[in-house]
Length: 123
Image 1 (cartoon, helix red, strand yellow):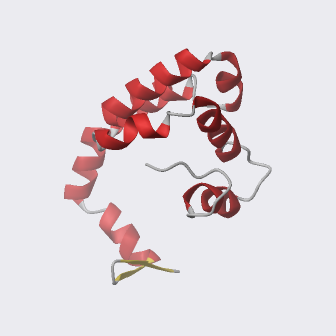
Image 2: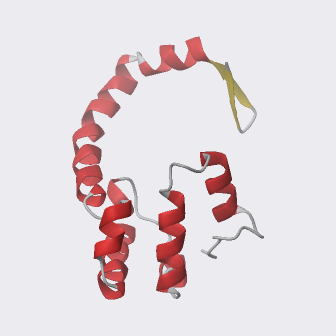
């Protein structure tokens, strides 16, 4: 298997070699606990059952907190935040669609990201 990213082509062995590099392992070990904790926090509501329980206002507030914190990664561009949740019902439906594992992941991603995708939200 070869992965291409911005004209950089890496084989699976090269990728394994990168992840075994002590400097890379140090970075992984440094950020992993923070990322695991962030994942636990967001997974409490960012799932099919959790979405059903939240009111529209609660969903908006959870998303704003998620977005503003960078979800344990890095801060997102804030200009898009309010645009994404302008229609909270559409946002909820998009999330439920993305989380529906009975639909192929490629189809889910395309329906959200493509310009004419059924679940696309600008931002």
